[in-house]
Length: 435
Image (tube, rainbow, N blue to C red; front, side, top):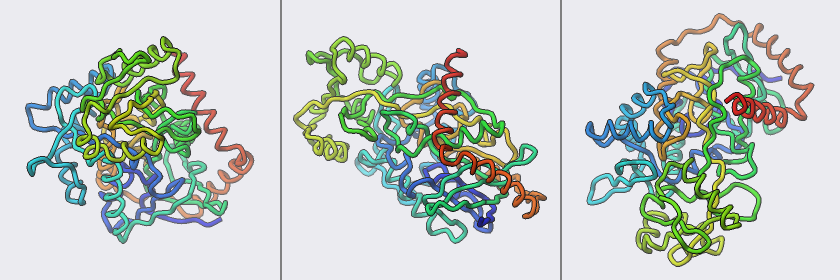
């Protein structure tokens, strides 16, 4: 079995992992691996935008909007860090070439559900792709970063509550040991566990199962957000999300009789409940969303990709109502981390949707996810640099631990993916029952 050594291992190539890599000094080696292709992260799929503190007068309302959406179960310290860091993150994104919408030469802000003010920057309706692709371009230029695609993490190598690296499987089916001084889990969400989800199907929460097996603390893994409006389809596969920005701009929801039945900018969990209630009343597997009220100019300029995708499904959103249905969308829980994204295991960090730093509470506020991922991805990198110290672990010791882990994995590798899925779903259900 091949063994590869690196200073920092980042498992995942979404926005949080990429931003972390950009903040690791270039005299340290960074290895990034991804289960799929490098662009197959949910960060690329984010449509709506990214929040930014407008000015000091906006602080209290930004904080309150986030806490209210999260049912006041948020960690206030984490929310404060995110808000206070937002302007610096946005400046850095623009330095990387991210092209946010402008109006009369100034940044154009929009508003989404549960936001009391417009504070969301966007790039058409593909903000996640715009941000993540620019970050990826920047990372690919770094001489100290190597990215491996189609490499799946199978297990973690640890001793005495210290992460030493991982055991992985390559696209060719060969095992690969990766010894790292520090490891960052940035593996995304858990949408692949659900029949209807806006996520890529390969995002199945493997890092959560691995963390549980090694005694790493998890937090709120039963906090799973359903997006109220995805395009209804009878086809199998990932559901296409109709951005909350659409409703923030004024699109209306109608029941089977063409009547409005809810405030379109309610928090996602509340609106999801109202949509499901209406679907039951109507006896229909969807409700209607009317974008025509926005006007053709707004639709084509602000939501061109939603327009094109719906057209592929046979709906012209400048003229037609579209059927929408709730689907699993975002994971607020995850591996417990502190303000610096450190887990309860030494030399192991977690960022992005894989982690739970308390920002989102019980329900994520729209467009906080990209911001939170970037802020705490950077904090993970900064913490690693601040506490940098090489472990006194020999290659021989790692090799022995790796071989022992490989033997255990080989016994169940055929069914390992399904086993991890069932372990995560089982823990989610236990959390729910405990409440």
